[in-house]
Length: 390
View 1 (cartoon, helix red, strand yellow):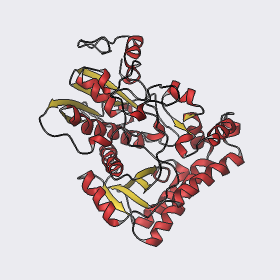
View 2 (view 1 turned 120 degrees about the vertical axis):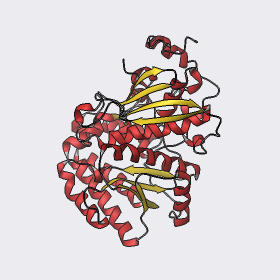
View 3 (view 1 turned 180 degrees about the vertical axis):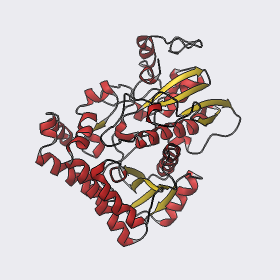
């Protein structure tokens, strides 16, 4: 076994120094988005740097989207072809995601990204949910969300596998024509069967109501100190900080470019006082409002119940939909604020439920803004040693 494999067949963990030294060498096989153009720091681990199939699988899976780019995943390696997937209880969003619903959707996103991605290296992923049981918050981070076993296969790779690396969350304002019903139906066909009901908002009056409600929900989150401060904590205010921490949000991700990036970062990095200033909040809301009003379509993901398994499976649905969008050169931004469960958001969520005729136990898990836009900032992912359960 090569030195660059930081987990031995016995389960022993090689030091992070050995691990980092291996993939820092880079590889010509790495797609261009995986490295910054400025200093050639790899933004994401490269599957080609590992020989164990399960490590290759993890490096593919962590390309998945996650709330606030928090990457709340941790893994226990069982053997070369098997692993357990956990929520990382040390990486939570208690203010905006008090139930950890979104983080479990993020776990589902990882699972589906891995399952699609390993078809490109000759494997099929068998998924078993909650292999040790999973009944309450006490299990979060303690018991696995899923067991994944890799099985050799001669089947062709999934057609969406090519779009895992280029997939991005795009928070910019969108341009061009509205998404047509034909385009949406093509997306559904590419994404395949889903657990959640995936609905395209066609009615013109309802379309405008979605804009109003999404903006209202962001106002609630932004003008509530604790929820808005959670975004500050996850914000990375320079490329150096982004390369060091390899997670979180950034000014370039919301569409700022050139000198405007530096100006915004200098203005906001002054701690809570600068972040929560009235002018800062107004600029933030102006940028968000412009983005929402530029939407070329809205899509909802709704489940009949609101159980943990619904959350995980919706995350899997969302990834397939994202990859289908990428295949068609379309982009998306998930708007999660309105479906969050903290108290001050409840009146806005109630308006949405009334608009759509939703009653418990049904739940709108996700609203996605879709459209056309230029390529967005490509975010970092943490290194594999950060994810492995010791």
